Length: 237
Image 1 (cartoon, helix red, strand yellow):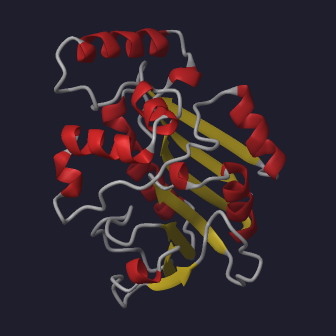
Image 2 (cartoon, rainbow, N blue to C red):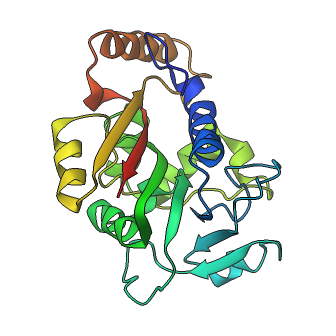
């Protein structure tokens, strides 16, 4: 992962993709699973190396999974529910902007720990709760925040994208003592949390954009991880 003095939000997606691909090429996981990814997979159109023997797309929705290409395996589970019946184990589990939709973040990570093979690694890219747009999204009614997102990001509702799902932001934080303790309690052997600052939600609002960017830079300089906007969470069993 390429790191700079300040990890800005514009880098988080590429850093996540680089992290995932570096694990695939360096650690050579044979069995990979992506939570979500029914329409946009983290590996994109890259050709997977020969050492990857299976790539499973998981989702709670059978309808979403029906759109997945036959070249991928599918697994219908509630990633925050009961997965004790799942017999498969995976060397790499990844998710991109799915963790915030889990109502119980600790149970989600417990499930990931259960589904990982020994030595396996999980990588998740999530927004973090105390950035102002996500805090507002969490505090206010879904109907109201949905209208706000439609106004600020109309492309998310153009028929080719998924629109907006309810978000809970449970255990979606930067590298804070609370976050690290919660993940350690799950039983992971190693934990990395890389936080990123700033966001694009106020780009069209003059004045608020400048104020929020200034506050984000202040938090980044002082490494106030609790006020980050995004995080890449890397855990190993």
